Length: 327
Image (cartoon, rainbow, N blue to C red):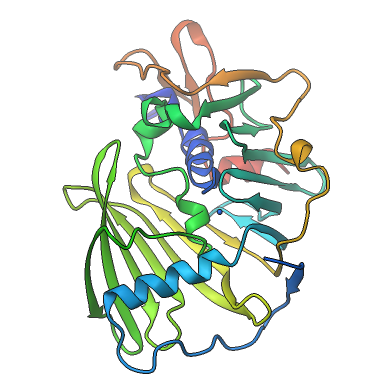
C-alpha cells in the first residue's frame, strides 16, 4: 500500500491532464476545389532566393496557412506513450470548427474532442463520472483547463501549419539553427501574460519544422516538431504528416500521424459534424470557472483520483493503465 495515497487536484489527475490538454490543443483556430494529398508528395518549392528577413519568413508562414479553409485527415492515429495507437478521424473548418474522434477497433470511440463557433468540449469513454467537459471560447482563460496548461486553445491546429502571425508584433531574428534551418521569435499577449512563440523553418522553402511556446518567465509551455511533410501544388500548401507534441507543465507527450489530407472539400452537414455530441448517460460538465481544490479535497488512491466523499473523479490514469483496461 506504499505510495498509494497522495494529494492531487482532480483536474490534474493523469486522465484529465491528457483529456484537458488534448481539448486545449484540439480546439481550433483554421480555396477551392477539393484535392487529397497523398504521401510522399512533391518537394516544397523554394520561396527564398537569398537569405530571408524575419518579415519574409513570417509572410511565408502566413501564406501557407491562408490556403486552407477546410481540412480532413485520413489514416490518422493518435499515439500516447504506453498506450495503443488510437485510430483517429479529424476534420476542421477555420476559424473555430473542429472535430476529433479516436478509438480502438474493438472498443469503439474512446475520445471525442471538438469545437464549434461557441464552445469546445471533450469526452472520454473511460472517464468517471460520464461527462462531456466543455467551456466557451470566451471563458477559456477562466477555466480549470487554463490552470493546467495556460496556452491558447488554437495552438495544436497551428502545428499543422495553419496559423497567422501578426506581422506588426515584435519579431526577433532570423537566427541560424543548424544546417538549413532559421529561427524567428514572435512576442504575443495572452490572458496569462506575454508569450514568446519560436518558429523554426527550412531556410529554402520556409516550411515550418518546429514550434515552441514560452511564458514570460522563460518556462517552456509547449513544443511541436513537424516532419514527413507533403506538398500540394494545386493549393501551394505544405502540411506535416507527423507532429510530435510535448507539454512540459502537464508532463505530457503524444504524437499525431496522418496518411493524407483532403483540402477545402465540403463536409456535407457541417452543423452536425461540429455539434456537441449527444451521448447516452453523459452530462455536460462546465470547465469554465470550475474551482481547483485546495490540498485535502482530493486524494489519489490506488491509481484512481478520489474526491470529497469518496467520489471518483478520473478514469484511466496513464498510458499503461489505459492499455490494461482495454485488453
